[in-house]
Image 1 (cartoon, rainbow, N blue to C red):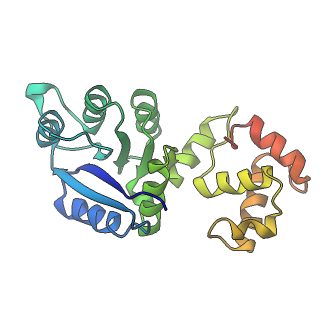
Image 2: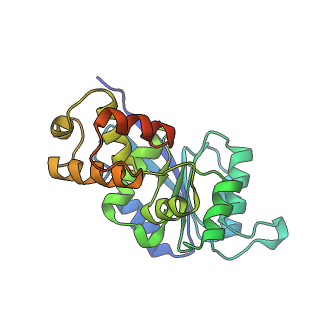
Length: 224
């Protein structure tokens, strides 16, 4: 039997109702063997204090980017808090949430922070949040759809796909027939077919055999 697990979560956002919303969703995480406790902060100063004065090491941190600054300690954004966390608690899984889908902001966050999760708030739904939590708890990267779309527009050598597409590719690579993939992940057969065809289109391989498709997907970094 799988042992229970307790996760210490830091949430930093300057809108208390958003913090409460995140907590409500996280507490509905379907794996009930995982429990959560929360530390909250509403700006860069309280975020700094939460990190520096904590008696516990945070396992996961959800950080907004744009918040009131803490100029005395040169903490001007959630990015600065993320850098502080990486120094003080290097095992903490960092998820950045932001309203900013601009290209320079996405590039900056990935280059400077390389967070395990990067979510554009406009992408955020209940299902998206649950999927993000489950993904980062497994030490896997989670980018929301707007981030993936931007990266695919900018990158020629790699193609980014979401968590579900990566799982589909994983099972195809294992020799699992597409029609049987819903036995392994919660997705319909028709959705598997649609997603697979979309990925083939991205690779310019419409109508190709799965074996050829998988080779190309690996070359483009779609399959881990």
